[in-house]
Amino acid sequence: MSKIFSLIKRICLMAAFFLCIELPPIAVQIANRSRQVTVKTVILIVIFLLLFGFIIVWARQTYEHYNQIPIRKKINLKLVIKGYLVILVGEYILGILNVLFYHQTETANNRSLMTILGHNPLVTIVFATSAVVLTPIAEELIFRGVLMNLFFKPNTFWPKVVLSGVVFSAGHISTNIISFLLYCVLGMTLAYVYRKSGDIRNSILLHGLNNLIAMLLMLSQVFN
Image 1 (cartoon, rainbow, N blue to C red):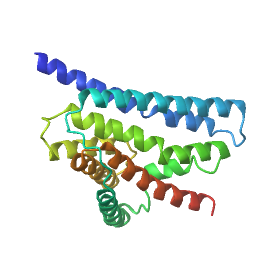
Image 2 (cartoon, rainbow, N blue to C red):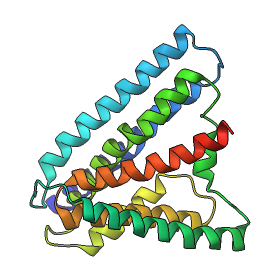
Image 3 (cartoon, rainbow, N blue to C red):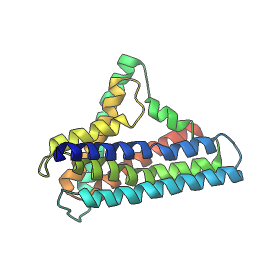
Image 4 (cartoon, rainbow, N blue to C red):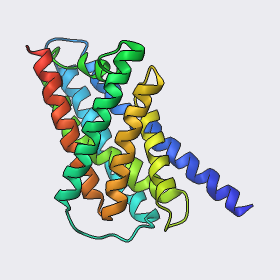
C-alpha cells in the first residue's frame, strides 16, 4: 500500500510541475496583446520572470531530494556537440516526413512561439532571452532532473530516457504523430546526455544551444 501511495505522490508531483511550466507563457501572451510597452506589460513580464524563478528553485530542490544518479561534476562539450548533431539529424528526417505526410513545414509549437515574437519589443527581448536561458534550466530540471529520478530503479537507463522523451514531448504542441516524435527525439537526446554524463549542466547546455539556433532562425523570419 505504501508503494502505491508513493507512486501516486510522485505522479501528482510531476503533474504539478507539468502544469506550472505552462504558466509563464500565459503571462507573456497577455503582455503581448499590446504593441506598446506599458506599465501592465512590465508587471506581466515581472510575473513571468518570478514564475520562472519559483519553478527553477522548486525543481532544483526536488531534483536534489530525489536524485538517484551519481553526480559527476564535469562539462562534456564533446557529448553536447554529438547530442546536437543527433537532434539535427532527427529534425531533418522527421521534418521531411512531416512535409510528405502532413504538408507542414514547421511544428504547431514553433508557429505558436513565432506569434509572440516581433509584436511587442520588450516581450520579444525577454521571451527570446528566456527561451535560451530560463527555459532550458527549468525544463531540464523538471523533465530530466526530477522526472528521471522519480520513476524506475537507480541503475535503469533506457526506460528513464524514453519516459523523459515522451513526457517532454507531451508538454509541447503537436498536431500529428511526426511532430510528437520530433519533440520526443529531442527529449530523449537530452535525457541521454544527462544520464550518460551524470551532470545535468550538459543537457542544459545542449537544450540552450538548440533553443538559441531555433530562436535566431525564428527572429530572422519575423524581422526579414
